[in-house]
Image 1 (spheres, rainbow, N blue to C red):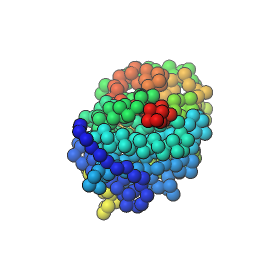
Image 2: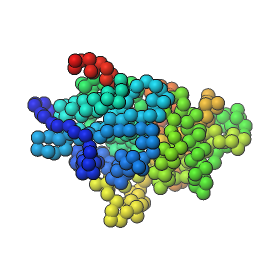
Image 3: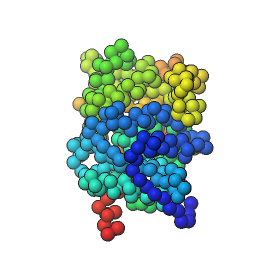
Image 4: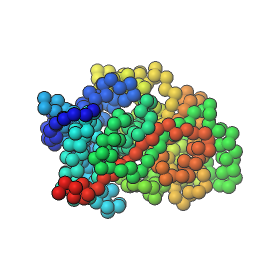
Length: 388
């Protein structure tokens, strides 16, 4: 949209402001057939320093944009990730929870506010969107706007990319969502590959997630994850408390029958986690509120939504065992067992653009690229110089 448009941006300081911050996406996407309303209680928890362990090392400042009538027209958060700085020491800050009406001036004012706050935190670069880290839902959707996102994946209007680039952002990493359907997957090729892997790696076996030892399983998976992903772009170790928090959120929806631990001589060396894609049920909630029926309402909706798809958000093999194609084994097992539990398809996301091994594996089994996301970055130093 064009024409003069003014807005005022101010920091979130009150409980009322926080409620407005959480509410805005529900208003913005009210008529969207693709956006999935997150549970409001989850959104408040993510932003609560007493409940989200991200705040044990990170900090953020929330901002709201208002039009001349006092109506909320946008939101953003400036984010400092202490674990990222400890790992990379690169003076990079982040932005997230970014939503705006279709006016560039509003987007620019929000980005200016986040940038100014980050400069005050001595950050030289702003990267995002992350909500609030790369270990959470992250990335700007740039292709796939006409489809409902999978569970714990982001959605946004097409105009966001143009606004961010106009402000000064460039793409620093593309990520992909791959779609695998049981009817089209190269299952025979995978079986032949798995047989070769077993011959070359005697002693390799799979077992399902043991929910009776959930805390132990979580600790094992976190250890493998932090090792397996440590050389990946943008990697930041996930803390014990952060992973426990994530696991708690997943526990209510994870299907342990299709979550696997890869073992070599009974030693855990890899894993995959699959989540039933409950987004169709969440869409039926329409406003993100569980009350008055609470979790029972969600479970009933889930049961009758006819869930046919899962998302594989987490997978990894210890670095010492990279190059052995061990990832094939749990992926094959997921596709073999899934249909007996009603699942016909799987989204693997997100996959880094430079993760050629995983991309080649997925392409070789007839997985299709379904959606494209981007992580963008802007220099706060150059931005400050251009304004001086």
